[in-house]
Length: 440
Image (cartoon, rainbow, N blue to C red; front, side, top):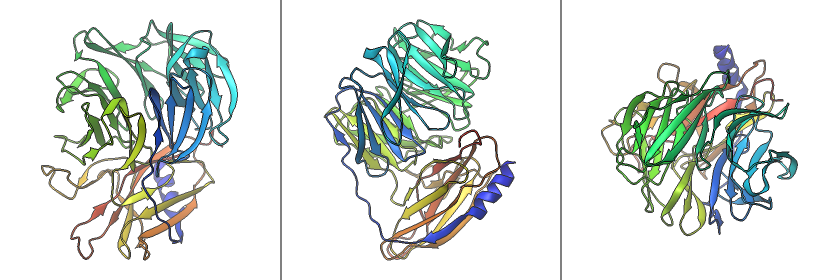
């Protein structure tokens, strides 16, 4: 099935046109004192911000950082989530004891879910379900029946929630008394009790959490001496640590699960590969010191979003060769990609069915170049071309149909060496999702 879909994708993405367009770095949003959540919408190339105290949600362009929409919800906010098909945004309105449902296209509130208790962190669960940390417990909310199943009583209102890409597993990450406690739940069978980390296994306070692309690993960032803990996604048994030093304030992982960015209280945001040895990556200097939980990589893998102590949210480019596209699309829709590189340079676009590490430089070098593509399940050359005189090209095609479930793959572009630069330039990887037949 997956091979068939790949072949269809290769055939249907065709070059349509090349035109002139330039981009500038956006300034983002100012005046954001308390940010409860940042979430990237892969179906619209947007980033949603929950400005908690003000009670507003803001949508930013994931490419330029421009403010494209805002909605005020009247009370303090606690978290942001989206449904299985990216048709709805769910915002926990902590002060209003409710969850507001927002239409992502009109940015209007369409309905309200009243739970009778304060709501904090939320995440998507299995299709048709939400995970919600309330003032009483972590619950699984069946949206069709509006029934709640308690997964863990007394969950911390400061906890993190994380759901695997395949929506089959979720993790609750709590901190207290200098220790991090992680609990994982099988979303395919809520009757099975959650698995919890052993006492004393994870030290410090959690400042970030993310799962691998396959959901087989969980990365838990701590402000303690061990840096980032890596645990088995199902058993929570320790796999190792990523030694980034103590005092982390924020950590984020890109959508392909191949690259990590982290900050230690200052304005420097470090990069690292999640491959063996964790080679260091590109360093970003933010406008000011990064706040706690103040980092996110947008769903297009192109931009790093920062929330800093000067109350600004800004975007910073992570790649010189820039690929812009939505990262989720429905069957039968048009799927378009734009590339911005060097005038008249040759470019290539590759695809694989999962991410990986294909190095062009020795991994021992600082910021080694590598394709975030699987060696065993790709890469395949999708297409090639030449940038126009403005260093731009774009192409589009129709998303293939005939598959019941979501199909995931990774695309990534490269630019050939040219005069004045004797090496291959690699662009941002995008983890693309073609939505299943239940998302029409």
